[in-house]
View (tube, rainbow, N blue to C red):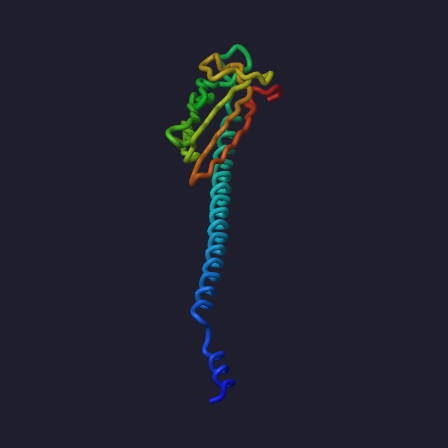
Length: 186
């Protein structure tokens, strides 16, 4: 057998152990980098999906609360124009309609609940970490941390701040409601 035949046979034998190991290491590095990018993308998608779901749930709940607060009727026993709010604190709001049905909006545990006399108790939102209710008079001056009975007569606007947290994602929503019955021309 000639030298040339032996050399061509060696060339056809395949890869050496060092070449194979180098290839495996390079493929391992590429695979781990790709998996990190995929996991990071999936985590980002999950956070975005949770944020969107929280925001949608909060919007629906706050829309219901806003509609109910706007419908607060006038207090017939008050000397002037006054909403029929019986109790307001930083985390709860209670009022009555002309038929003496009581409505209550409050945080109970980690649930935001609305109690309507004719419809019972409704859980509007879960995973609530904070609820803050502020009240303002006609001049948009903060009335204070709360009121009861006739002390609620000057209330014209109510600001509600709600914060929820789920799966490490925190979402907050704030809105201001004008009580329609107390607006001039209502």
